[in-house]
Image (tube, rainbow, N blue to C red; front, side, top):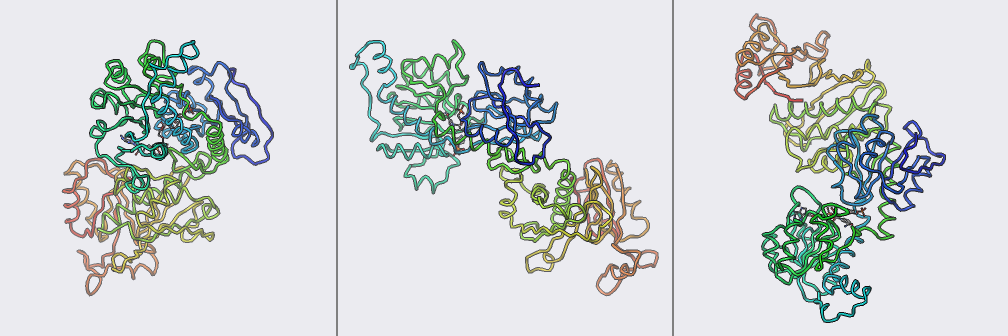
Length: 600
Ligand SMILES: NC(=O)C1=CN([C@@H]2O[C@H](COP(=O)(O)OP(=O)(O)OC[C@H]3O[C@@H](n4cnc5c(N)ncnc54)[C@H](O)[C@@H]3O)[C@@H](O)[C@H]2O)C=CC1
Ligand SMILES: O=C(O)C(=O)COP(=O)(O)O
């Protein structure tokens, strides 16, 4: 059923599509025709906005019918919208034809596995130019002069302005827009000072701006102030009463970023009480400002030049953003990768059913590696060479990027924070490089040592460092059966356990009484054992077993009963708090070689 508040069109497809047609795309705001034509040329059904636009209630009703949603700044893609979309599991992507994604609940989208993409630079020149337009308009009272002329007044005396050349412009946020504004302002003969705690010092030097360490210290020196930060919890109300009071009475402020970066009530007061001289505002906390709101009073204020969120509204910018996001939507709906994902996942929706168990398996193998081999045994993850060997059905797959990303994620996420970044398909290669992880992928069609499973993986690691400990080979093997994943080999031991929850891996001599001792220690600490498995040496029953005996100095170990002790791994699933004290007690218990605690 076609939605009532939108018109639709489609054309036949020349490309195979992984989703079941008809593939439907909802565009809720005006988008340049170039992008729409691209969508239609792929055979997708594109529903474009009609007048009046979809209400929030209508959007909730319509969204379950769509695979993609394309918006600009007016549509609020709330958690409720994403929840409604989840009812049909169709929605793959929300595309923002522009920069700011503050109107999209990105976390909720991530939780639902919906990719959010934007056009990170398609409209930044337009936004910068609009900032300069407002700068000049505010300096020369262009708005009031135009209004007066249209109303038949010739009031030159009341419209004397100020020059911008040789004045100081303060820029808050030296990102893509901020840098362009700074360059243009320099071209106008202004001195530019900037505040951006995350800006590159080199870039600032290159643009020729002076960096200030504290916003509050910069404010008293500026004649004009412009903000170019995203709207985040940390930038909301960045400019409040205290900040505005610290400025010159002749200063003028600009906002082509987002309503709310200046506290609107404080700004209104600053204008009314003449703490500052004027403002140029393109954005407001509610758009359009609701009648009687502070935003509406600001827009109507005689000292304000206001525009209705026109920063990105140029023919060129709209063509850019339209093509940027429509190209990405097509790519995602065909199972490919976006170029500007705001929340890139580890795995794309299209690949989900087939790859998901292996992504989970490999992520857990990576995490098990780090916690068992590297952390548990004082080794390292960085500086090692890893080999991911795909067997069985996986050997025939060419698109293994999510598996590579899953390994990087598993290896690094349990040991350190990623500087605020989560590993995903877009950044995995970069993060691996930063961490010094060399990862090779191999496809082995003969099934290797695990031929009985439909899809199995071997993770092998060799140190690139000179020391013996770092060069030794370490191996983990695993396989997926249905949705469940299993570890079938850990180091030299043949196992069969699900890598889940909290695990204790004890490397020990396989001799009587060991299990009882371990159980006793855990019991004393009120730790429950949820499962237990003893993993023997690989090929234990065959001739290889004898060569795997533990060598301590001169010869094989004599166990308590006088027989030769062999090594084993005891793998325990546990529930309860495993403290360092517990680990130390276990490690000291007779016959235990080492213990590692693994949380998966
Ligand atoms: N009015 C309009 O039509 C348009 C508005 N925009 C708005 O402009 C914003 C900026 O766009 P871009 O320059 O492309 O973003 P960007 O991400 O390239 O730059 C943002 C800059 O803000 C800085 N920043 C973040 N928190 C800060 C803080 N607390 N104090 C100082 N600096 C901080 C960042 O370090 C970064 O350099 C967008 O998020 C969007 O909201 C963008 C395009 C059009
Ligand atoms: O790209 C941005 O962040 C903008 O603010 C542009 O908004 P718009 O697409 O014109 O509604």
